[in-house]
Image 1 (cartoon, rainbow, N blue to C red):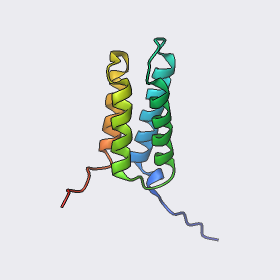
Image 2 (tube, rainbow, N blue to C red):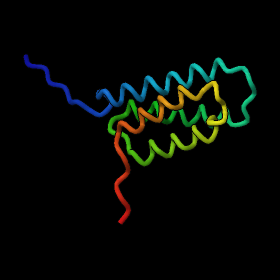
Image 3 (spheres, rainbow, N blue to C red):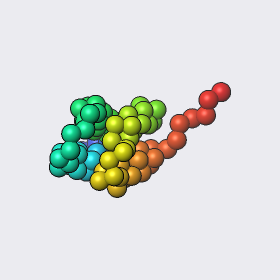
Image 4 (cartoon, one colour):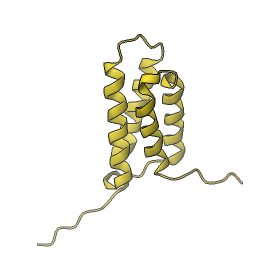
Length: 101
């Protein structure tokens, strides 16, 4: 019997990098002791990013929108800067948005 598998975006290196970056931000955010007013919003959006990475080919516009919301919520926290940079790189690996016509 020959086994075949459908390869989806969720099994690509880019999807793995996205999952890894999301996990890093989540870990570092959980370890950050300060009260952050937008923590819950960032956690919700990180969960959406993780789902997009797992569910198959993500929509680049949705990825970038999620990144923007996470960056807005956490971007002022210097302790999370490296993790957020990794997340941006992982989103960038999916390419840019098509030009508007």
